Structure formats: structure tokens, C-alpha cells
Image 1 (cartoon, one colour):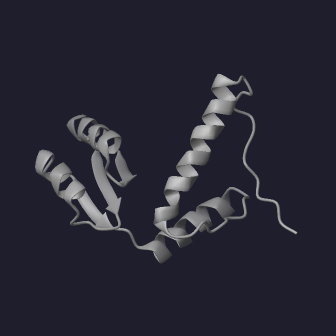
Image 2 (spheres, helix red, strand yellow; image 1 turned 135 degrees about the vertical axis):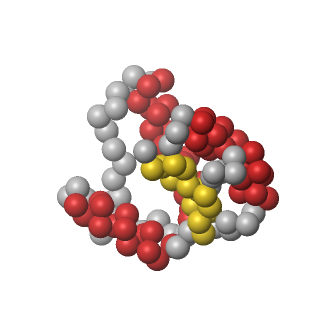
Length: 112
């Protein structure tokens, strides 16, 4: 299977390593494909590919995928904003699993 990780922190690095050992093709999409974390991951796993993130092209692809699923994509800004989306995901998990809301709810953006 072909898999891509956005960034390569401790969790992503461990997952990428295990998936490579299992025979999958893993690519890292990173703001800086020559960063210390990417180089460290590639030293541990020479088969690991790294590509610089192409924000405009990546956003267009994700936007098309969202539209194909019937959703209106919302541009949340540059890749650095992904951290804030991760925080929303953690809150969603807490509400759904810890507080018993279940998985059948989503975030919505309200506009006037």
C-alpha cells in the first residue's frame, strides 16, 4: 500500500518505520524535506521517501476529494494551522469517547 504521512514526529516516525517493515511504501510530506526530523527518519529507514509539501497543489487535491464526497472545503490556512485542527480532533475524541457522545457528530462552520 502507498501511504503518506504529513510530518514525521515521534508517532509518525514509529508508524512509518513499522509500515515500511511490513512492506508498504511510505512517503513523508514535510514543509522542509531536508529537516533534521526527516533526515533522522531516513537514516533509520533508507527506503523512506520525503517530499516537500506543495501547499497549493495539495489544497487543490484535498478540495476536489471533499467536493467528490459532497462537502464544501474550507481553507484553514497554511500547513502550520494543522496543529489547531489536531486540537479540534482531540476535543472531538474526548467528547465522543470519554464523555459518551459517540462518533456521530461533526464540527460545522457557521457563517453570516
